[in-house]
Image: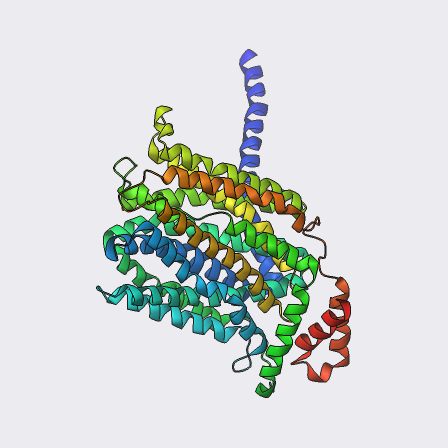
Length: 505
């Protein structure tokens, strides 16, 4: 009898265990299904070729390719060209100049269609330009420094043109699908973070095996995929476009941009975004040289540098996930306050590392650097994403590619100022390839300046990402004019924008 009772008791327990296992399996399956369903939803709402373009440009070109090229360029400047940290910092700023003239690329994509298309030909041109520049760097062993910088700048221009073209698609879809604006920025962030994770994981290995120049040769693969995006992108063809109107379209676009930029709801957050980046001095080249060359420093190998950056890029991915699922609905001003504060405070970990205090607490350099870089990447991503969403909300319909590019160029001008300012600080403090005595002071100056944008948050509107910043009336007027001028659909976006902006500001 007791055996029968024990068997009867064991039956419910086994059923309960099976149910628990099934529920765990269902939860795990849902974790994999949610991203898949999210991608399917975005593909269904905005066509799969758009999602493919975002993954290629942000994930493969900027994420994976950017990680490979970033580490490769650092070692190329350090070991092949043999420049000082302050010089490398300045040259890095020069190669970023194509990102500052993004409004030019955006203006071309908006007002100058090629063979009837506004986006497709620019992806193809960007891929060809990038592939040519990378082949030049990979095949010439003793390339002069000036030519090397020009080639790196041309490669950067290829990535920038593709970036502004896909950003135009993102901004256009943000206007037609306002409820998905944050999701599109999250898609860009996820693609970039995952690509960077993979790229940094293999960057150190490839630099060790084939050298920096071999890495440049691999960069022709992302360039080739950008050409493929140009052929596959779903874009309606413009019929009977009159190229005689291009010059007038440039004038109208410039007028619309200037009129919109004079709106205080636009120029105030633009000013904040510039100052936020410019005041965060970039001294990464000094830190990189200290990581690899200093006798008193960690002296990391090429493989170690790649793995450190790869693991730390998980922080960027976590920042994107945290924003998407917990922070995307918060007001811009409130969110930027906390992200800027965390961004400033996180820089103090670099000070602890350079002063070797981590060793006094028994924390190895490798572990501590991974933690520091992960926190820096996460806080940087959390700071960057609300600015991207804010920028997409400031774009008027009709020249969204141009205006979004203008806003991004303002950010990149801030990054250029940060890079050159950091190079100036490294030079003044006499931080060289072998001398790092004042590196702690450069870090302290940078950290203090990172906190100063907190005093300028009054420039940011206190609205949430689901609200309009520009008056909705502009879009209404655009639609009315579009209906009245249906016979001239090829020019209606630009004309309606100029009329609507002039009528409201």
